[in-house]
Length: 372
Image (cartoon, rainbow, N blue to C red; front, top):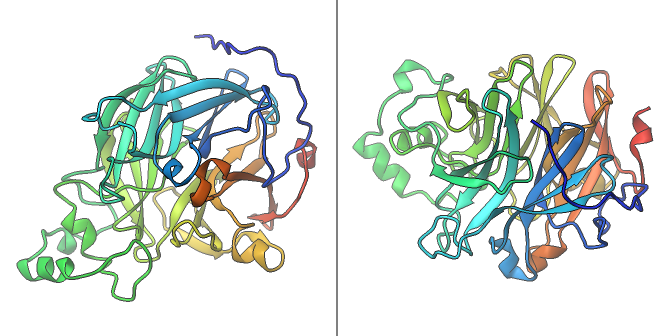
């Protein structure tokens, strides 16, 4: 199938990437696509992200998921709203719900574009911890919403021993109900109870990404178990639902904002800690198989002070492979501004490899020639 970008040819006025500065599209408007995901399809890269309105209200969804298109990763045309919120107050995507970290992948077998995102129903805070799914026939959409779920209901993770595959006892249920679990590290985190609690109804899924391997298998990676444990979940062949196989990664270590990529046959994942909107140190881990075992390597950011302590005052959202430059990757992150959500900024930095390990250094202005 062919892809048609409907906007006018780019004006090509962006010549460099300037992390943390306002990035304008081809109509001179600030790009409004936060928590981004990217898709390269038929020579065009698409940037999907949360459209945010001004003020604190912008931390919820009032427009939906916006999409931009580019042939050079520098100059972007606004292709409109790929997935819109609903005017129906009874709809799951009604204005005021939370739509975060939309990611889109292309299924070659079905010729459909599939979007997954973290969804929280309106007015319920972050208690829903659901995954929304939508599909489209073209990369810019409009996407049709299929519904939401908590992944892997009724499925035990591969990484759990048979003796742990048990419903909670009455005493364990009482103990768990008495705990305050704020979504960040606490010394009493019950890392062997939460996945059992959620067995029947499905596992919690908040910050997330999608990854398609070289064999076409697609994976949904998300923060689960009150943010304390990552799950890596194989999707069905049509990418529309979990396949029934998943693994728990780093139980009790509190990782969010996962960004997964593959380099020279090894899987790398950049994550952040859990500190709300405030930035913290990034983490990178590696595995020879996507199912693990995963090894923590430490902080990939190099530099002094804020550069390493706060991931350049940002939080990971995606690792973008550079088209037509094998082995070249861009670290994509957000500087959140919850008091005025629309003014959040994008931090894009080149990933370099030292001794086979990805590292990220600050560069106030750069272009893709850095990979030559």
